[in-house]
Structures are given as structure tokens and as C-alpha cells.
Length: 276
Ligand SMILES: [Zn+2]
Image 1: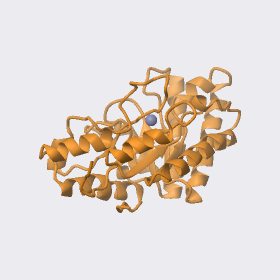
Image 2 (image 1 turned 180 degrees about the vertical axis):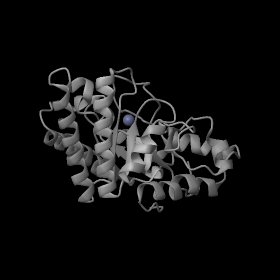
Image 3 (image 1 turned 135 degrees about the vertical axis):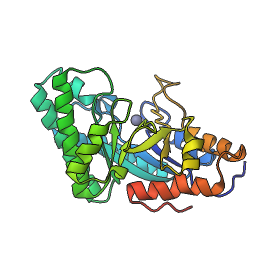
């Protein structure tokens, strides 16, 4: 198959050579016409990393960077995104006091920020439970999220957040207070009703309308790469496949494709997207 040379970026994907398909999934993305990925660190539990302090996250992040190196060998451009999954709080709180869990998660984010400062990752990841949680857990999670925003301000990097569905207006206020431009706070699995930057699941039906309205967004698969959860979310080819479908059906133009996959991505994450 031959495609016109276009940038196609998945801004939230996981690759797991231990529990999933790893590089083969990256090749699927590449062969479907994909060019750039934002490779997001997996939750510590999926790598069987037992956490007792924030420093323990280094093992999780080193694994993400190892996989990023493997994926880059296929010819993809890979941007690592490191952080702490918001659901870690519920797991940690099962065997330590909530305040200690907050410390561990903040420490993990400090560790991730160190990697960003060293130029080994381009963005951070945080959030708060997207499932039902007690007010104590929600407060504690907001404290972790506020810390992540402070680090994003220090590193002048983007922050991907995983949170409940909806606008998350209070997070826009928190970002403002921390000094992070809201256009650099990326709402993972987002919806157009947020003032944060929405990263839309590739099949989101609002995409053609948003393009016409020139409302910035990015596209993601949130592919988990876990063999035990085959149909979970959508596959690694989804961003290139759906982008191509939108192009072929005339719903977006090649120029729109550059705007979504290169210009917008570049502005949000502070990276340069060029064709290899
Ligand atoms: Zn994810």
C-alpha cells in the first residue's frame, strides 16, 4: 500500500513487549501509515513493580524508554510521556495510609519530571480517579494533580491527564494557578466540551466538525497492548486508519491532516513534527 507522505500522530498509546505485542503493534501503526507516537508509561501494577517510594517509578519509566528505543528502530518517531496513573492511589491505599500514597505518587512525578528535564521524555502524565472514589481519595488525588501541574510549569512541558468525563473546569483553574497554559494540559480520552486540550479517541464522531471549526485537538488510540485484554479500547492502527478514511471520504483535507498531526501536536507538546 502506498500513502501520500503525511504526518500521522497517535498522542496516547502504550506498547508492552512483555504482556502484549510490543514492536509488532508499533509496526502495525507504521504499516497503516502512522509516523509519530506519544508512548505513555504503563501503570506500575501492569509491570509488577511494587512501590514503596517515588523512586521505585524509575523502573517503570526505564521500561517505557527501553520500549521507546525498540519502537524507534522500526522508523517511527517516538516521544515518551511519563507519569503516575491516577488509579495507583486506590491500589497504594490498600497497603499504606493515604498520605503515604500521596507522597509516593508525588515522588513518582518528581522522578518523571527529572527525565523530562534531562530530555529523555517530552511530557508528564497525571490525573484523578475517573471512577467513583471517596471524597478523601478525590482530595488526595487533586493534591497529586496540583503537584503534577507545578512540575509541568517548572519543566515547561505538557501534562496529559486522565480524569472523569466532562469539561474538568476546576482543572483549568488549577492549571492557571500553577502557571501552565491550558492548551498544554491534555485531557486524555477527552471530549470537545473541555477548555483543556482534548485528545480524542480516533473514532470520535466530532472530528470533522472540529476540523471545520478549527478547534485544536489531537488523536489517540489508547491502545493498551495487553494480550489478556484483546479488544480493550481500539487497536494500534486506529489513528492512521481513521485519518485515512476521513481523507478518502473528503471529510478532511491533506492540509487538515498537517494541522491535526503536526502543527497542533507540535504546539501542545513543544516538539517539531517533520516527516522522516
Ligand atoms: Zn492509556
